[in-house]
Image 1 (cartoon, rainbow, N blue to C red):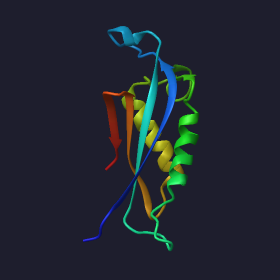
Image 2: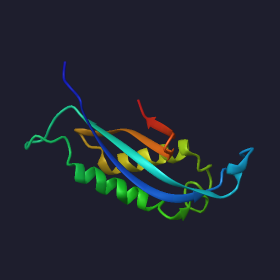
Image 3: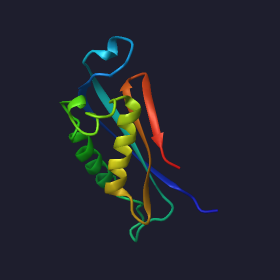
Image 4: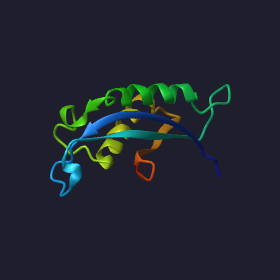
Length: 126
């Protein structure tokens, strides 16, 4: 049975959002210092013995989170149409990172989005 390599990086961004239709305080604009864990998996290594350079994962994550950093999420696509919940943000991050990083050897496996130090959502695709 072949092994799997899982590489993980951590980055962060700050943004504000309003949860439309939420029956509580989060229906008002508020902000978070989000933490993002990106997990990339590979079953094979390249010719120098790497699945993917950690730098490539970090750069892609910073590029994607840079679109959200210090922004009001409800004003930018796709969150101007869909509720900017932690779940929806995590799924969007996963899709954007997969477009940048996935290839014949490497796949974005999971994105964990920490809204606070004690609350997170982990998004994966089968």
